[in-house]
Image (tube, rainbow, N blue to C red):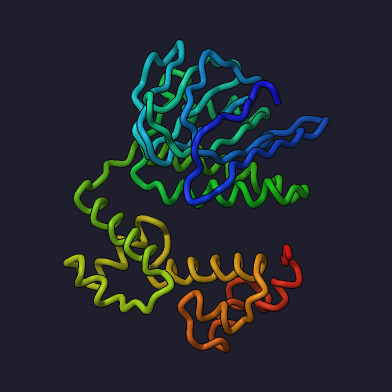
Length: 287
């Protein structure tokens, strides 16, 4: 669409850009997501207006946002900003740099309430995030539902958009414990790197000078999952990708995600996804 032009740049982790659009129902709705995208950009948007509301998540990078009501604001990822419909805006990374972003477009009568409640503010559109993974998880859920496209999934996407507004408002008003937050972020990044390796949680806690109980409590507070549950989610999500895009055997996929016992892997997969790995492959295989 001409008002949401594709921007050039480099894309992280070999990911292709995503740009999805859907028309809202003819009868109008309280809240509807009408677009979703993900990209890495190296150019600046200048003097643009959108006919609907937008939210942009800057996962990493540095630049500025400029609107009439907010003036020029420095963006340093992770941050998120709102663009109410019709807002004249310019934004983008610092010259010579790029940043990773996800965005969503939305409209509906409920947006007036979000603005009235100051969950969305034209005067203060920028939210500096101290729990990026919480918002990333919500954007991922919104993407999955929006891509599915059936009425129930689109309703779920709208509910997730509302939750993004609420959680961002909470992050904006929550005092953070910088030292504790930095340490748990390092633990999360370490566990992500080692997700498919044998991991002893007690040793991981000792590595970061925490007791296992403190590690679990801080981890749960940061992303809503225990370290073990987080690792399992990463493993299952990777297994789903391999099931859908490869012809590897179930045993090979189990080993690839760090689970030596294929029977245990299948049982854990079923408990989480409510279907066996083979059933998931039949439903989602893209070969």
